[in-house]
Length: 290
Image (cartoon, rainbow, N blue to C red; front, top):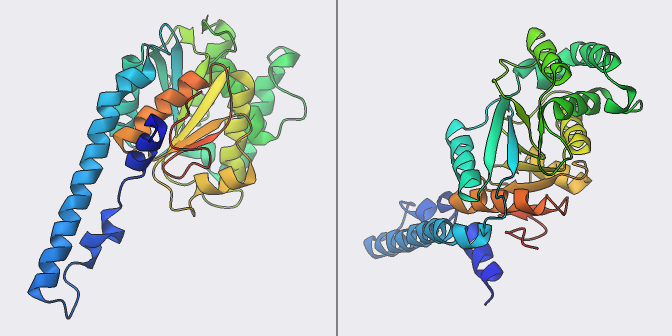
């Protein structure tokens, strides 16, 4: 079995709630049956723990310094798990890279009820920048994604410094409550990691998320969207199926060590190759090697 196949098997893991543990205590079960189910649940948990330990142990070999001297900007959506974000930042460092900024998006940025605000402000900000900064045909949220990308990222592999214009765009968004704050930073990164949180719901929720990601993808060298485990029915799964993420790669299962390792390998891959769906439910495999 290849390393990729092993990693795939371990990364998928076992969902205890739908496995043996979920069967324990059913009416009519005998003591022997309960004992067997509990033993099976324990074996499943041990297998899951082994998968996490395997990912953590294999991470160094998988990374092989592929993010050495590379910078990453992290963008978090409302509801993103802070512990997951912190773990991802640590994994970026383990791969040799550095996170130059972690920019949270405010609730109004992804609220369908605030689309007029997002559209008006985006148009005003774009008008103050060179014409090539934002595509004339960009939709409301693609425009906003391009503006975020202009301010946080660059297509230069070595990264770039911030400017008075990039900082002014972020401050304009903060002034409109689209960003809760603007962390101090002097660098823009070639790679952007988007960490999903609560689903962007309401009318046009998919368009909001997809537009922001596509816009970021047009401004950065590479973008990876990371979400929690998918059951095939969540927003990330839907966007993957529709091909709405543009050039961005995606990884699900990011709440697990295996998913976090896959996300960082995906960032390294995005330096040269864009796109692809990876993780526990990824159509292109668990781990974005190559």
